[in-house]
Length: 303
Length: 150
Image (tube, chains in turn orange, blue):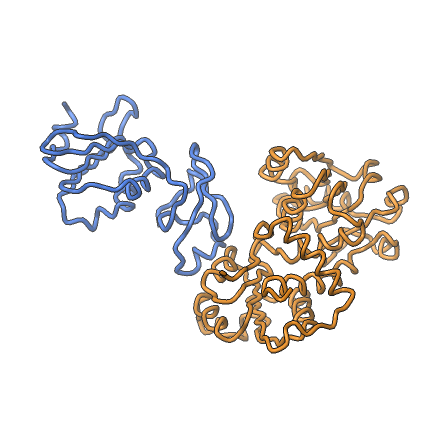
């Protein structure tokens, strides 16, 4: 049996998504585990990402494992000019699994080829960040009780936002999703994803701003509209306030609707939403620990 | 015929015809003809009824496996191979774009790991016409007009 890695969200089958959901719930119910007792997990962060690293390290600790690694490449031999190949070869001798973040795209897939132990991609440049998608799915599953028949609003930067692309790919495996894309033309959902949905016969609608149909939403997934994505700063100024979610906009939304956001938030969700029970982004981040416990134990065949 | 006057005939070997003029040296690079010891003759900017101008390569005493020669389809999709034995064309072959392309083309994405470290590229061909190839590592698509030989 070859080792199993998680590099892209499409590396997992629908059955595996469901297994991760089930395991996440189990770990949430009982977060103190000893499945990783005697095991060493390496967290290699070639660029800093405090949130993701702490979430993974919390997951490892709750599974009873030990952690080795570094939190930015200045404190590793990379600063001496060591290649990614050699770093991975060396660390795979020391650890039972490698969790890595790296600024170059495709670096995680390459590391998985080089490594003798399983690799989890915790972000390779703008390419993939599959554990984020799985925790998004778990948050949806937990709040809606299902991953089928959902009306999803994806809002903000739909062009460059890797989280929305991965979520779209993963949820397209489930029955009857409806996607509503809310974005300025500069940041619209790329054609390749729309074509993908069309080929699968999945309904989607595009909107330039929030409108009344948000009241049909089960999930509102917010992302950041970043100024640096705009070539013309005037265009940014024009749209920057359109994609801000405010509390009064939620007045007539469905009782089950939840607001998700991969965080960090800048201003795209007004702070007056935070106390609304429909706001879910902070709990979503908490769910990440249980989902990451599930991913680690699944890849190491501990469950 | 005029082209035979421009590029002399070979007794045995392979003639690669209908190469786009701009692709001649890319074909040379892909087939590593610069490392050959056999006699190789080139012609470029030759008249072509079909293409306007074209390039041609004649390689003496050398025959190619399909797998080897199909690689040139990336830059010369309409290339034709004539297999020559004793000055006669004994077989004509066309090139086919392979499903997978390993180690020839550079990934267009400057942030791809294959452009940062000594990693051999791997692509899956997702469209033939025009050529679109997906990088196995960064998952980005390199389009026909961006193809650069590594």
